[in-house]
Image (cartoon, rainbow, N blue to C red):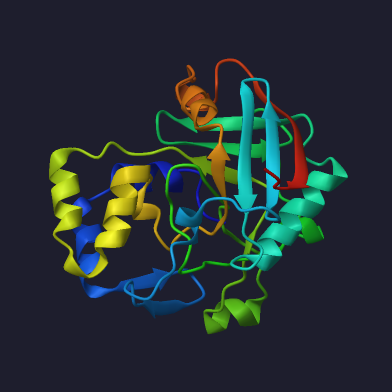
Length: 258
């Protein structure tokens, strides 16, 4: 399983020049199980299309407000199927937003306020495959899952094989600050002005690109994301836990209509 400090470590090591090189030369998608080269001139930034009539949506109701997000079953079919099944079963009702990276993102969907509940490796809803789409990117409001390492047999370990899955927990992204230096560096990458401009316009976390699986995009409730990522948090042993509980009251699955 990936360490609990992974998210913080990645946030701290953001380097714009790395992302610029990725844009200029193409992008290598990296998970523990596979690597593939992505030609950024060919990707379809489906999140820029917004939400359309008939699209599946999730309505996340929290005690700090409501977030609405469009789901992407074409890009992340198993992840979306798993999320919908959990939501419709009432699994998320009364769960916690248990960790906040100030101004950056929050982690949600834990049965306990500390986010320490052990993953039941045998439960089907904790074993969705890792699905990383070249058409989904970590813009502000993106919903993503955190891959974890499943149990391995001795033979699998010997062969260096990995079993990565995504569980019921998820992360909702806010954004890093795009100062002029970062903006200019992104725009210097000639092969993907569209992607660079999308990050500048929408915000997001570029260094999460093609690392964490994305399955949904916020279209209403950005103010709620801002509110949640601005709450007071605990430090010390309970680092980044909100000082006051933030509850997911329910997640309703519906279809978008005007």
